[in-house]
Amino acid sequence: MEWRFASGGLTLDRPRIVGILNVTPDSFSDGGRLRTIDDVRRHASRLVDEGADVLDVGGESTRPGAERVDADEERRRVLPAIDAIVAECPDTPISVDTVKASVAADALAAGASIVNDVSALRLDPDMAGVCAQRGAGVVLMHSRGDVASMASFAHATYGDDPTGEVIAELRDRLDAAERAGIRRERIVLDPGIGFAKRAEHSLAVLGALDRLVACGLPVLVGASRKRFIGALTHRDIPADRAAGTAGANVMALVRGARLFRVHDVRASRDALDVAWAILEAGRV
Image (cartoon, rainbow, N blue to C red; front, side, top):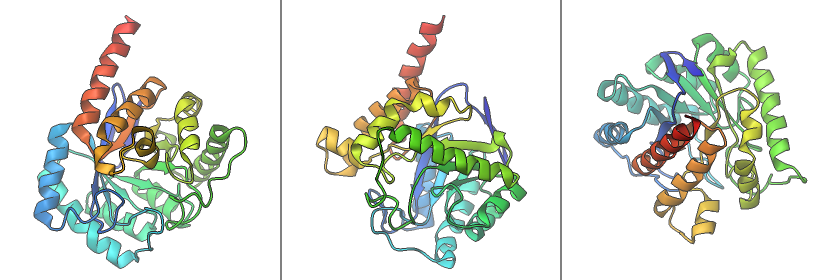
């Protein structure tokens, strides 16, 4: 399987890591860390050195209660960061984490080749058209509500089969993407761990991830430093959840995920590479 995007493609013949590079002042675990372009350049280089295959640049926080950022401010944050990454890591694909079509369009023009939309194209009616026209790779993430509420529990209402509900809602968004002209080989599905989900919902979805994989598209998991990991490990500080994140990623790998969005690249790179070697040895 290969994931195609504007600048080429990425074979999914082994676990691939999407390194998180937030240029926000208020993200839940790393907001405000990258204050200058030199900070961005150094962090991008470190993530790639540690094993990131893609870099995901975000300029608007989705933490619970986050305030919306207008498009001009988001562009002011992400476009210089993309310019810096293109210069520092020219061979590394760049994803822009945004729900705004105008920001996505400018980011793609600046050198990004993937749009990671945490609303799965719900919140901006122009987003699907921009992605289709530019040939962008697209991550469709399951969520409910708007940017300010999607990471809260306000919409965390599920019946007996939360995984089935997540899959059904993602299928609707996949249909919308394809109707807009986004080619199937450019689409990745993300179950939205921690978004409109309590701990038991995130665990249920991860435990049954093979059902989402059965849809036939690559699956990305973004469990990095999430609340449910803190609850299970009693790690209150998000930055202390690297080992728990690696554990979640290994189990997601076993159930068929091939893309993993993480803050702590080295820990997950090592864990996933070892797990993958064991899985491959078992197939001989």
